[in-house]
Length: 210
Ligand code: 3PG
Image (cartoon, rainbow, N blue to C red; front, side):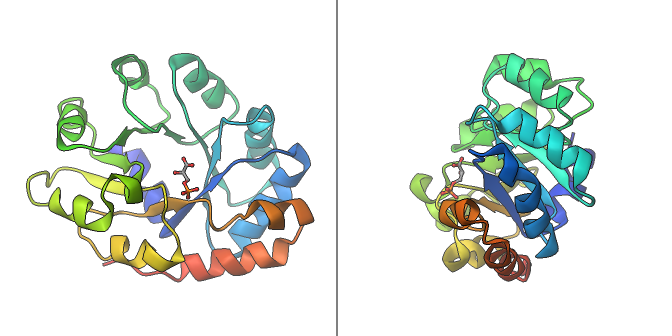
């Protein structure tokens, strides 16, 4: 799982978290983000169009590593894999979902917010997790405190992360990347302002880790 996830998560400091309402915006949005240097894209399964968006990005956008987010159960896991997702993200880690993901060729980034949840994932052989909801759960100080007792896990904080606080997370030794929706504001997507989105992506791609 980790061997397949790390190259995807390490490709850029930020993974855009996308809630795509209009199917027709999926391909230009993905192209705009990739033009700015963000190649791993998380399309959340929160809209009816999400699976079609994943298929379209996978088929039409060169250089995209398109993943599916908000995977809550095995059915969504399988649908997202069938649509061509190269990675899967979930807000938490239910036993059913983890059992289902074991043995899948497509890697899962499950969510955690506590040391206990992180230990469960370590027991299952995971080396990377989403820290969610990052700012609300305690922010950079909180995840920093988990680095020493849990050296076997790296995290992708998501939830309330923005250009303002991303660098604080990225400077920590147990952070591999951050996720966030700020690089694809709904208004810019609706207006088709792809240049603005490329500019936001470029700014995010320039963030540096340790
Ligand atoms: C989410 O699941 O909605 C993500 O965590 C994105 O959060 P954000 O909108 O605060 O970036």
